[in-house]
Image (cartoon, rainbow, N blue to C red; front, side, top):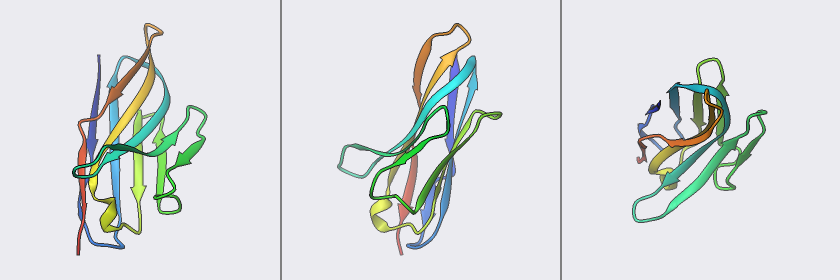
Length: 120
């Protein structure tokens, strides 16, 4: 069983920064792709950023140049550094981790969600 715990959300002013973390623990052989999504109030869940098993990254146009996704493989922890925050970045942010279990089965897990509010 793998547990995923998100942390680091909260309140930021426009132009400010926050860093989200997503720590996975349990029977993980290897983490494959890891993705951040977000869901603004009253809207659907949108893709934010992805990092592949090889470290290749991809970003939504709305966050490109402001957000950075990274991963510490030794700690099985995913990060999202968010700079130059805008009010429209306000959302609940979810991490999604696809991993290979020690039983060599591909599994996908979600974090519990972390609220980020950007307001003057």
